[in-house]
Image 1 (cartoon, rainbow, N blue to C red):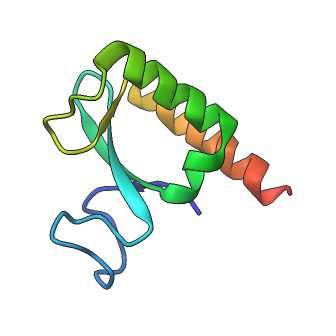
Image 2: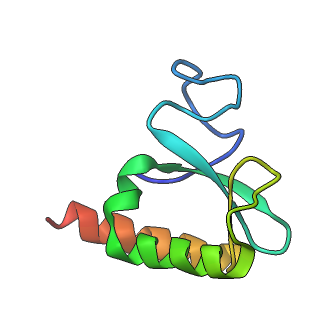
Length: 91
């Protein structure tokens, strides 16, 4: 389980026309709006839910790019995802 940089997916199967693998959703991170695909299972994780709450407070529900915009730097987001992956794998 983990995130993928868009365009670096090893498998083309299960991709929809949006380029998002089945069971994932797109998020845009940082001022440059770097696009990542994230497993939907992250929606159940309290830390990721808090990140989504911050996104809602900052941007509301209007996401013209088609994915959720996350209000943090790419490096912070990658660190958070690494933390989530390590916590999920230790259960």
